[in-house]
Length: 304
Image 1: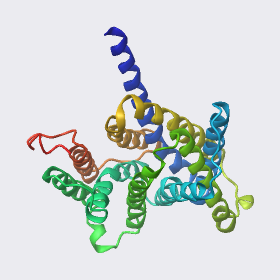
Image 2: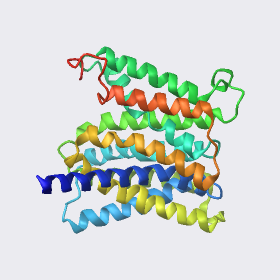
Image 3: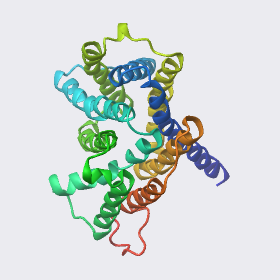
Image 4: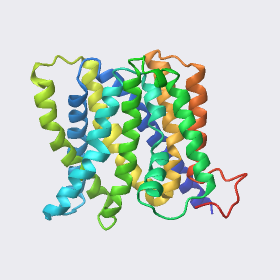
């Protein structure tokens, strides 16, 4: 019993570490995009992360697939899971605070539910989930503020870009079902490699990275994004999926959003306002309801 408690304690610590790594990525992105364009930030992050993951795959003796169709699927997964959302977040953070970006990026479970029920028509949908989604959408609108309706605020495009990254993550999670027969580590390494290949021409054509003059802090931020927030985070993530389960790992999204806001305030001088705090609470409440982590006052039979 004692060994089991110690083991569970280790997994909880790793969950906190994972949430910190992902939450801090928004702070690192904010620093990086000050002197490096978004596409090149993403390319640098993906190149470092995929290289490290491929090294681990090779070290563990896992063979790379040879099927062109499978590599094509990895390309789609890499686009949806890494290239597109990373770019949307990086571009969005040129216009909004990192804490706000982290908060808006905690909504993939809401989009995943809407897609699986309204588009794919999979299974029944309990009232609890509909209420959770409604609360989440209200939370997003409160966070964005009144300018989302008027379109008068230039920052709204940054907010919408980050919200779009959550939609991309949700689609990626659904698409990833086809890789259930593949090693999780292999899927991550191959999809991230294809994402790197997809982003390379975008960075070269749009940013001309050889003409850039990045600051030292930007270079360190990109390196940290690749090593810590991408490669290391993926390794911890796949371990926790096996030990804590998908729902347990998803609960880290609350900590991730909290870390992104806290680090933005402490290190970047970002401010907190009432709409951000209220939106933060509403979004986290909605995700908890949709994932079934808050069931009262809903009927326990309505837990799916």
